[in-house]
Image (cartoon, rainbow, N blue to C red; front, side, top):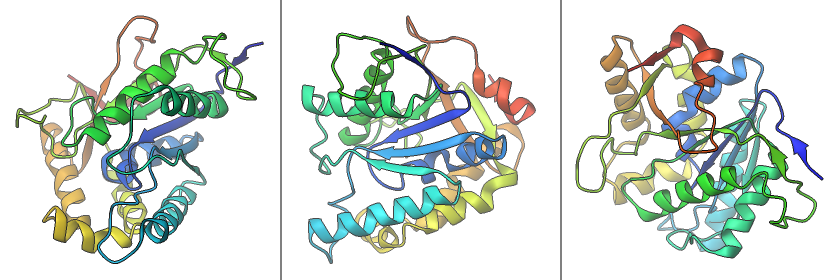
Length: 255
């Protein structure tokens, strides 16, 4: 038995709590303003992102922070409970990802860049791609989560640094003007209080400032205050019409 994708439902699939907020929180906020249902999922709970807590403690803290952030958009947070650094492209993990997509039944999915600064991000991106592609493959058993059609529209965020692992700039195929919702994006990211100190020590970045600097750099590309960069997956079986452009109109600047 097959179901259908739910209209006006968007799902972000990332590796760790705060990936969505840093990379596409503005786009998700704009979709929410248009009446869309928002889901934010991570493959892992962020159990490695600390110097002070045990994996169990920081996982509890970070998933609570992620749920608090999603709630700002009246959204729902999902965690697939892999471990940081050990997100695998294997049968068990992929089945979890397919189950998630079938459970939510989004018509639009945003995920991480296929080339990024760490393999967790790249693997989460591959898992999201295959989970979308197989959403209607009825012979893949995901229990109570039914197969559905059509394949969702799929978009990739900018890599966290704006470059691939060789330092080459990755140019987005579209920019989303998020100037009107930058305060919401900042509020969502600020929910992840546990990460500010960790990222300053491990990545040598100032958390909120780095997000705003990245958003301002993308904004400068198109002459606005703040923007986010995205690329659309255009492989076989995936939709080729730009649904984000249809939804957000003039806020989407296509190259």
